[in-house]
Amino acid sequence: MVNNEKLLSVKDITKVFSIGGLLTGTRLTAVNEVYFEMGSANPEIFTLAGESGSGKTTLARLILHDIELTHGSIFYRGTDVTTIRNRKERMRFMERVQPIFQNPFETFNPLKRVDTYLYATAVNYGIAKSGESTDGVVDDALRSVGLSLQEVRGRYPHELSGGQLQRVSVARALIPRPSLLIADEPVSMVDASLRMSIVNLFKELKEKSGVSIIYITHDLATAYYISDRIAIMLRGNFVEMGPVEKVLSEPLHPYTKILKESVPKPVLGEKWKDKIELSTLEAKEFARVGCKFAGRCPSVMDICKKEDPKNFLLDERTVKCHLYAKQFKNSIL
Ligand code: SF4
Image (cartoon, rainbow, N blue to C red; front, side, top):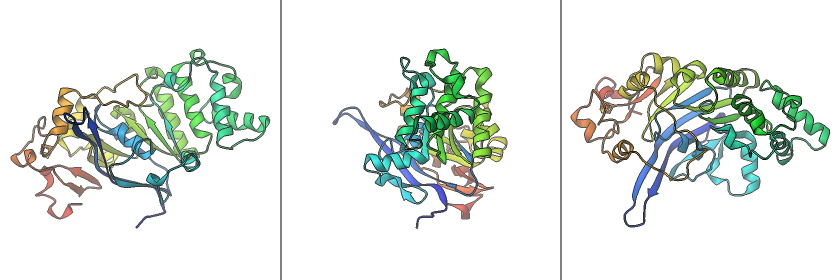
């Protein structure tokens, strides 16, 4: 049964890619039976964190209906996202769910003035009709990210800093008045000195404008600072999910513990990759039977190499690890 009170319900979704030729190719499960919900009553920032190849971006693309699911379902306010078929339905969905990309310099054509994107968005979504009202809509959106139309009008991307340009791309995403933003590594290409201003902007958008955000990052420090909940991803699986305070202060899953010690680097310079290229480690782990982390886990047991662990619910979070099977026998989800 579909709960209309949920902003987003992601139910056991899986995405399998075929890599290589028809005969020699392999199948790669980039997202494996992922489940989570976001409520509509209180806006929240939900972080997806993990190394490169963990499935974070693929999951974002599935939610945005940019790629097709292999199985499972995604509901936005009770409407099945996978049934979106035509441009009109897509525009209606995108009014409510907007992406923000990693590299603002790739979001904008260097030969086009940045304000033209804002005007086009206001017109395409039917937010403003006349020239004057369009100015108002664009200025309001820019002011909500700490800029103004006066500062941005007529400027080309190279005339703005990375931080300013990322703010413009957030302003563009806000024009249709979405209730959910999906931000993929939004601060990784921004100067370190300006990162916190963008991160604070997301916090403000949640608190003052009631916008929920799926924040995709490799940076656990900013995740800790702005998130309400976090999901740690490994080779397509949620291995630990729960309140950010609990997951990052007292991690239970061996991978979360290691991730806390060694912050992974994002893959920079690409908007969304259409081709999948795997490192040797990634390829090995994707192909592994049982727990995908068994090759690196300091607590590995025999069962880990044979059986995929189930999710156990404990202490307000889910943990996908055999270590908790005995302790929480009755808590299998
Ligand atoms: Fe480690 Fe086994 Fe838990 Fe995987 S299931 S994280 S290998 S203890």
